[in-house]
Image (cartoon, rainbow over all chains, first blue to last red; front, side, top):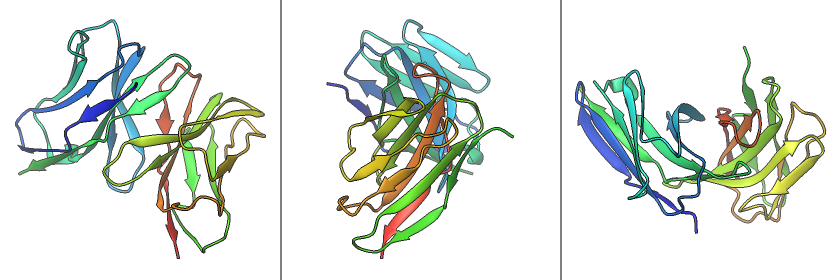
Length: 110
Length: 112
């Protein structure tokens, strides 16, 4: 079946890099997404990667996809206190269905 | 500014009542979605609509109903049959089913 797993918490110091990891079980997805959720708000689309790509870079964000290990990661360079939020990975399948992980709460300490 | 507007931001329901959550988008998107978010969990799909006057059940549709009479609007009714309605409800839309989904700011529903 379709399942997406994330670790629940990550704490880093301001200026360090953050790496948020995600594993999934069903490799028939078409795209994989990263969303950011600030307290009491909706989800903001950060970036996404097509399932036949290995890497995508977008300013401070780097997405790595290892299809063999079914592992997706989001690296945030030079993490700032404004990056503190919950980060969700999601798999998209044909027809539009999105399966979300539980979310990783990123805490950035000054 | 184009976007997705959910209202109200907070909603309270008495036992046995139906309540309706509003979702409006001015992005000219064909597809719209309703998700439920519970603490410490990912989002779960309630209903979705790929075109006006058509919608399909998601993974947790029991106790909910929707309509899609206009392209811009996709209201969700939480009926009294939904026994555990307290949650954060998120509406999303996309140009098509294979395009990225964009989200509103959510409605928090609580039981009195």
